[in-house]
Image 1 (cartoon, rainbow, N blue to C red):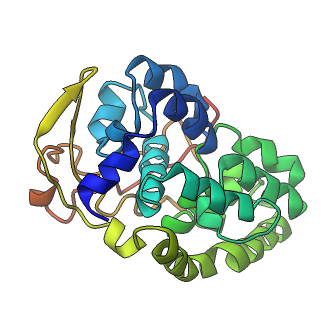
Image 2 (spheres, rainbow, N blue to C red):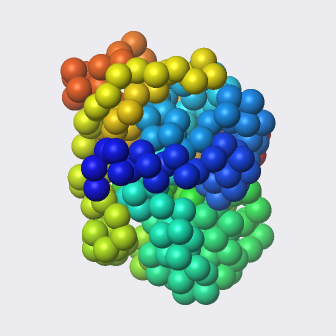
Length: 264
C-alpha cells in the first residue's frame, strides 16, 4: 500500500480513538491525557518519533516508548485500518491465535488461562501487548516472568510460563508474516525505514508524511531479574531523529541496562 493510501487510512483515526481506545489497548492509558492535549491522531502516529514521546507526551520510560512504537508498527501491518484490526482481534478473543494483535487485556486473559492468575494484574498499564511479545524477540520468558512479578526462585512457574510462551508466541514470529500478508504490510517490509514528504507541525509535535523511523525497535532487554527505577538507558541518545535514513546502524532503541514494568 502506498504512503498516501496509508495516510488516508490513518486520517480516519481521530485523536479521541487514539487517546482512549488505542492507548488502552496497548496497556498505556496513563498517557491518555497527554495524547488528548496534543490531539494525537492517526496521522501523527503515522510518523511519531521517540523524541516526541519524551519531549511532548511525557513518555520517559524507555519500555513504554518501545511499547508505543511497536503498537504503531502493528498499525502499519494493518495499513492503519481500524476495521481490519478489530476483525482480527475478534477472531482471537476466545482462541489463542494471531497473538500479534492481542491487546493488553487479551494478554492478561491468556495469563489467567494458563493458571497464573495471581500475577496477571501486574501487567495492567504495563505496556505489554501482543506486538511486544511477537515483534520484540528479546522480550522473552524471563522478561515476562519479571514483569509478572514471579519470584526468581519459583523455577517451576517460570518454566511453565516459558513453555506456554513458546507454544503461542514463537510460532507467531513466522505465522504472523503470513497473517500480515493477508491483512496488511508484511513485517519485514514494515520494519524498513523510508521517509517521504516534508515536515509539518501540529500541536508542537513535528512529524512527516512518511514511514515511522523505527529501524530495529528494541534490542537487548536485560537478563537481570531485578527491574529497577527505569526501563534502562538507550545507547546513542544523541543519534539524530530528523534523518533516520542517514543514521548509523547502532542508532536504534537498544541496549537496555534494566527494565521496569509498572503501572505508573
